[in-house]
Image 1 (spheres, helix red, strand yellow):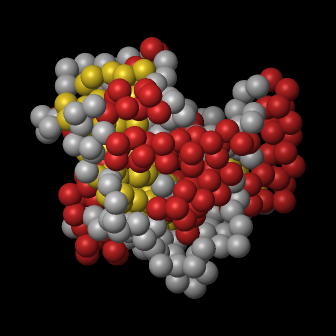
Image 2: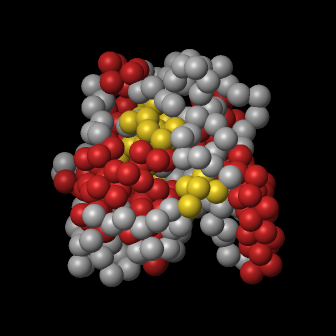
Length: 337
């Protein structure tokens, strides 16, 4: 079988490509730069240089493929051109789906985010939770706009199934999409010093290998036009760092910083980013998210797909072990096929 993967050189995409190749699948991987292509170059992978906004390159990469995974997205906390987020995340995704239909691909699994479900109040949010009135960052807004065009799509070709990962972490490419692992790495090296607020706000953390499994299950069992939350375990920041301490043996001191103190710092980082062109570590929208709980339910995926995520403790232990591995010399070429 031949399978197309957009975002094949991203955090989730790389791990998905590895799993597909291990199954004997030939992956048609879309890439933009030769440096990124090196992350997945190897047996079982055919590389196609292209762009989500270039349908001709998508057609070429999809030839003779039966299935497709659309994991590509602009997931950064800030873009120099805000409209580029929507062009890539909405128009680009629709280009992938349209090209898939035109080349005979039967089904596309689209990676969205659980962030569009909004913060939780008394009950965990899930696939049927009414959408929030607004979102904290453009990435979430763009994914919401995309889902409005895809949810309920029962007919036509290709079939489309949506998956909504929560806060993904684990061994792999240390991109902005792997921010939780980067935070753990910085904590272990003494560079991460704070906990937002009182540390009692909750979030849902999911191991990257579980997210990959969820994608494969959605391809196999998902209902067209529906979405499936791919989460792990709901824990607070305090609980998260306690698990990191216990699994790593590192007990660095952390300072609880009120959100009202962090907001001016985030605004300053954003201003500096506009001057030097480097992405900021954090932006005001993310700081505001710290005021809320993000408790999520994955019951639909568990019952309908057979999804079975591991505990946060096991996932972080595996992540810490990987971070301590002596062969981890760079943040770029971090795996071998």
